[in-house]
Every structure is written in structure tokens, then in C-alpha cells.
Length: 63
Image (cartoon, rainbow, N blue to C red; front, side, top):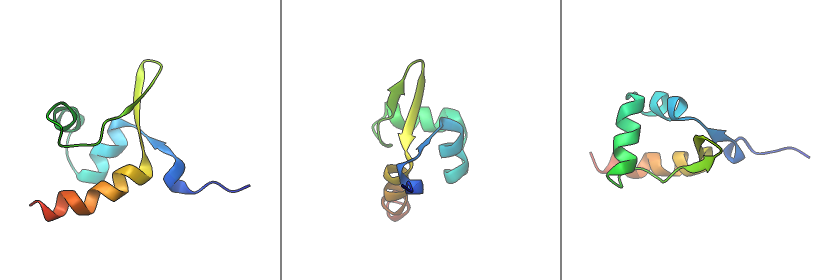
């Protein structure tokens, strides 16, 4: 069984790279409600890649 890459979870660092911002900016966006809420996995936080990819066009259209 093959998994879609969109089913993968990404880190704060990977999100920051996708948006060309710092990890602090990603955390600030989450706090301000400007970025999808992450999933807590133990002490870590992750986002589903497909949720982040769906968010990108919305984020770009707001600029």
C-alpha cells in the first residue's frame, strides 16, 4: 500500500522552509490564528502536509 505524500506530517522547520520564514514566524502565526493548528505528538508539534499545501493558496491570495 502506497501513502500519499500529503498524508505525511511536517515539522515547524519544514513549514518555515515552505513559506520562506523563520520558525518563530510560524509559531506566531499559529498563536494569532493565521496558520493551521498543529497536531501535538508527544512533546513535538506537526502539521499534515496536505493541510499546509491547501493553506498556501489562501495565504498567497491574502497578500
